[in-house]
Structures are given as structure tokens and as C-alpha cells.
Image 1: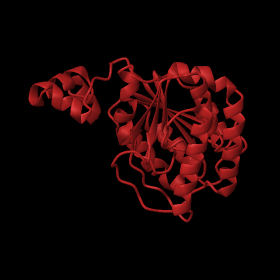
Image 2: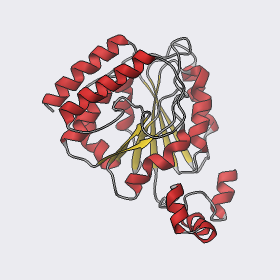
Image 3: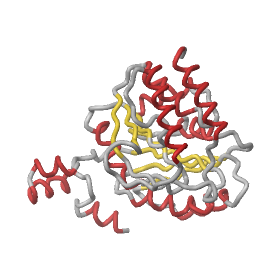
Image 4: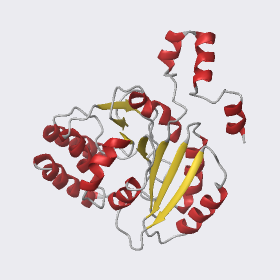
Length: 278
């Protein structure tokens, strides 16, 4: 209700009227420094969310996504969860009816296939101008969408990676060997792709719609190997790739973290496999 009243008054954040008000108040240079810009009225952000046993965080996460003042379609793919995720998704879908800023769409896998398979399903259904991947836990903050999509909206980039290791955003301090593993995999990936990414394994990857249309039919990995595969495919096609810093509130294994050492070995294989051949 609040977002609708703001839109009627022309005060919705990132609208042209809102931006012009900011320029009058603090000046164009200050707006640029603060990352203020105009998101076109016709812009639609597709948020693809793989879901597997996330009943504890799912409702809070979707609400955070909905609260971002950008027109969105939220594509949730339930990868055959064994908890109450399916029921929570049905409730969320019903409650979202009539929300002009957020179209919620839910899809289900009959058998568990993995994050990569859920992303492929989601990618095949998107209608937006730009597509962002969002995990169903609370490790990544949707409030950072405006900063993530800015290089694409301003036609500087085709793909944006949100880096947990770049800049001064807040990070929860957790596992040293996970950190080292991530850095090793990113460095190895960079050797094959000739990129200088700081966080290849990040969840926050943002794509222009035409990039998704180009790579989605070729994606093969069904689990976490999808991360190096997508990176290799966009690098090989020489898309303009940017990075921007993000915050990170990592989970422990007791809190539901799923990735393990086997996924690390799979990522190694995928880096070499897709780094050598499309």
C-alpha cells in the first residue's frame, strides 16, 4: 500500500521525479557519489530464487525482496523440498495477488535436482529486463539490488557479480577454510577465463535478459557447478562484466548451510571443463 501511494505521488525511490528531487536537494555530484540514478518506468527485475528446505527463512526472504522499491517478478523454484517450503510458497503466492510491484510465480520440481537445475527452470520462465539470482536463505541482502543493477541500467555492463570480498560492506566472520577455498576456486577460474573477479562463487550474479536467453539453453550443471559454468560461458562470449561490493551474513551448517567439500571438487572439474571448451 505504501509503495503504491509513493508511486502515485511520483516519489517512488529510483523514479525520475524522485531523482530530480534528490538533485535539487543535494546536487548532481552528491547523487552520483551516493549511487542515486533513474530506473526507467518500464523496467522489470526478474528475481530467480531456488528453494530447497528453506521454510524457516523463506517468508522473511521473500518479504525483503518485495520491499525493494523496484517493479519485480519473483520466480521461486521449489526443488522438491522435504519440509514445509511448498506450503509456505503456496501461502506467499496467494498473499501476493494484486501486488502491482511484485508478481510472484512458483514452480515445482517433482524430484530433487540441485541449485543449477532450479536456476535453469527459473531462467526459462523470466520476462524481465534484468535477471538476478537470489538464494532463499538470509545470507544475501535484497536491499542491495539497486546497486547491483546500476551498471546494467546505465548500459555499462551486461553482467554484474556481487563480491563478498570487494570493498567495505559488512560480513559475518565464519569459516577460514571456506574463505580460502572460495579464493582458490576464483583464482583458478580467472586463470581459465582471463577475468580478474574477486568472487566467482557469489550467489549475486545479475544478467541482462538477452545474456540469459543466450546462455540458458547451453547450461548443463545441476548442482553448485552452475557457478563456474555460468562464469565461463559469459566470459567466453566476451560480455561486459562488472563487480560491485555486497554485504554477507553467512550461515553455519547448523543453521542450514548446504555446500560441502564434494561441491568444491565438482567446482574444480567444472572450472577446467568449461574453461577449455564451451
